[in-house]
Amino acid sequence: MVVGLRVEDRLEGISNFRSWKSRMLMLLNEQDLKDHVLKDISEPEAAKDKTKHKKNEVVAMRFLMDSVRDHLVPIISSHFHLVIADPKGSWILSTLMFVDQ
Image (cartoon, rainbow, N blue to C red; front, side):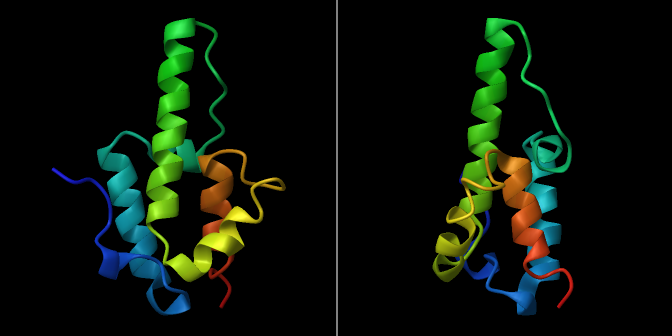
């Protein structure tokens, strides 16, 4: 089973921002990754837990980056060095781009 948003449901801009946000939150919740974009989750101490945490962070980031149209990827990825060191930062930037429009 393929996990992710359909191509036609990817974030294009303000026109589909609300539906994209709802779909993304459902997807992330289904995969137990919602907290990785909505909360600050500190890295666990135990090595086994660290590995799982890092994998979840990467999967959440992949879901987010795969859920936006190609013309938005450079905008989001160009801010990686500023605010997007983790899925929460990516989520915040993706939502702030359209929330007040």
